[in-house]
Image (cartoon, rainbow, N blue to C red; front, side):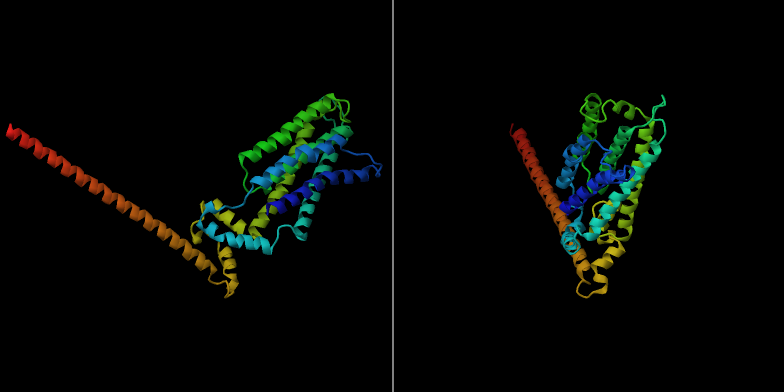
Length: 322
């Protein structure tokens, strides 16, 4: 599952990045002029977006058996559902490319028309090609990073540290080097770019629009086309550990019953009965342990009382003998 999601995300983030240059070709009559410097292109997959994706591939999980007895019992259903409906298919691949296209269009046209013929600072400086380039590239890094966090089911502190360090801190260091090194096309233009309120306003607008789009798509998927994992995640977010069949939605119970299919009609009852049996067994073991401790404590009290009475009688006999 994680491999499929990482492959889809890899196509998505590169589609967002490369489609910007393709759209820019219509504005330059495909003269070969690039809107993004070659060094930026090389570092995109080499440094800025590689480690966060690797961390997600290693650390992410949607559910684990410790999330409740029902989740543990549902593990075979989860594996079967992924086998029956693979994540990586033509429809999902097309949807990820569509999402990349929407993000690219929002980023490109917001940036081009916000900065077009507008001063970028208080001194009245006008934008140039490399100012627009830095603006577009910064938006892309924020867009793909936010999308990665939205698609990650379990965000740990390791994921957060890797995204902050390998994407944003490394990008800041890269921009400082670009500003002072003549080998880059955007040499000496970074200060004006990051000092422009227009860049930060555009960054907020573009990333906010893309975030709302992603959130809407994710919400629609959870509400109207949830799979077993989504249903269990919703139950866990509402009630905590899913230990009772009553915490599942009626829609999920109906799906587990096979919509009236006789072959599957008793599956949910089997899960519930096994869970109740295990809970009853655990409660019985707990009660037996309490009873045993009470018996052991009463035995110890009796032994202590007998020993104390013996000591008292012995001391009385000694006093009488004296």
